[in-house]
Image (cartoon, rainbow, N blue to C red; front, side, top):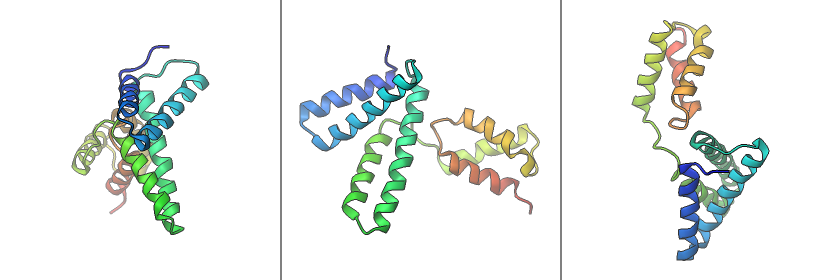
Length: 152
């Protein structure tokens, strides 16, 4: 199976972490590689960059949830470890869109579908999820769409 450019970048970072003996970073990179390999095996196909970004987003979401739970349980050491893992994982994801860029994309999609109420939300979210995949947190996008389509 061939590796996507992003997978190759992650593999190279893993080798660099080994050479520099950066154990913390290496542990996170190994987790990423293991997760990517598992997804490849489960799907039976090579991953492209979109698939890799989807896996990275899922890993980030899991760690955010864990960090929040650890913070609530007064386990700052574990919460900090989760935050570090998020930082390493996010280093491989494309730059996230700003709130202004998200609002602009939502406005464009709403204009395209002449959306004026919540009935159009599914249609708009389908369009935006394809358009903004990996570049924006879809929960933020959803909140902006809801705000725009909410009755005034």
